Image: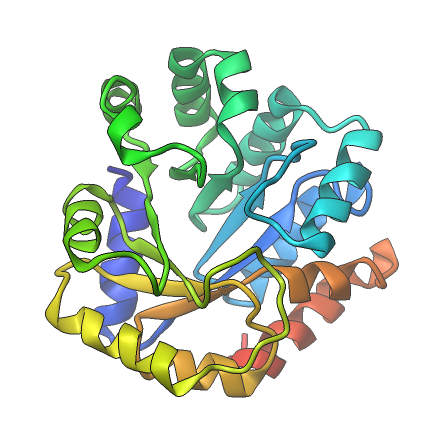
Length: 264
């Protein structure tokens, strides 16, 4: 496990705060924006960033992130380039970074090489939605050797027995989708869904955060009441694609403050 990510999560929750994470596709809306966006999110007080690895078939993502992935690929974004951006960012910041993507590009890169290069660049963890638990065992030694967290996902329709299994083997935290389906849907937090997440307190011992479709301060507040934090993705991508490169620092600060009331 990444000591940096683990200690940050423990310190934040022990202080009575909730975790706030943001997802951004690397290389979007242009390659030159990636490092300034990471720096701006850090300055705005985001707890950690999920940096997306663009892929041509992002099966868990809705239209917004699909379009961002296509744009990033057209921009020439590659996995080695993403790791270079993380390494540059890491020279001046200790904000945890999690790579979120799909198994195909990672296997093409080579799992052992990927984990080793992630460690050298300063990556803290990985979320691969299409890596089933049953097929992850052969890969776990590579994650462990590189001190990388491998974070599993659950949904409101995940059976309780499987939730307990994934919670036992996930590291850092458990990623919970706010609903079944792809990212970015404009859905309100339904009572049945929030009851499901509240019940997780009695089911798992690890921190859990909620993502998918979160786009308002009201949703952040409601989900924070039943979880350890949230991650905002599609809403941030829609926001950032409208910002000129020069305005990113102030714009990102405004975006984060608008959802969390943080005063960084």
